[in-house]
Image (tube, rainbow, N blue to C red; front, side, top):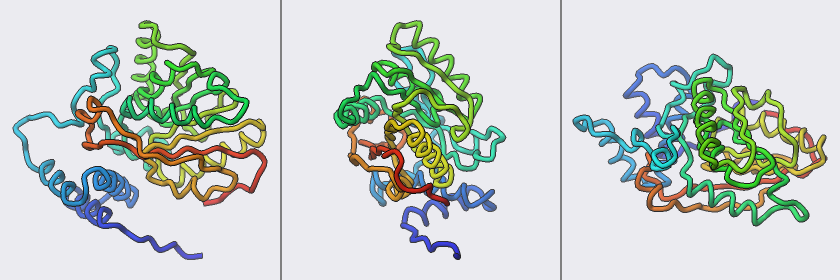
Length: 296
């Protein structure tokens, strides 16, 4: 079967053009996809016209004025941790085959995370409680979601991060968080590829803040499906900023529980690098022992 025809949005064309202006010979198509991802997110938040203006402003020198992407989030100042900053996928290379599928690092807005967990907890499988779930942040970065998750009564909280530098920062943040008495459960940071790690006891809540592209996402879902079938316990997935939502939406045996636009607080919106007012979040649940493994 030949390659599937793609329908490109206006945002994709703008992204490709912007990428070509800054890098006349792109390293590969995946980098253009990453630029397209950022542009589509901006269009969703600002609209096409404001996105074009935003790109023009970014291309214009501002006399050393710090951008929102460079600002320290109030969360970091309050708790003495380091989770701020926007780091491109190119800067996150760890020498792994999956490097090219990493779009970027950016810490999730605390208000978005708390809203996502709240909606998920309302839709728990009958007979189960939040305290029975292990929480796993795939593509944990500097660990902001891990820190926030540890304030809940999860069985355990695990952050899986491929980049060693980010994993080291996340580990330091976890130590600081524990020393402040913020954590209500065990925190573990794992510097490893998410498709090769050992999963904590089920049931699981797997958290994804758009950590990678379609191919790695599909591979991860196949692994989680096998884990759900073997463990005979549910595995839930929260997918924030679901750039590749069509992958879980079409995945056999994966039930879509809900899809919501989650709103930021004014404090989070004021420092958001994308000037977003919210994030789309999809929730899914694996149904054990159904269907077959989906292949790319």
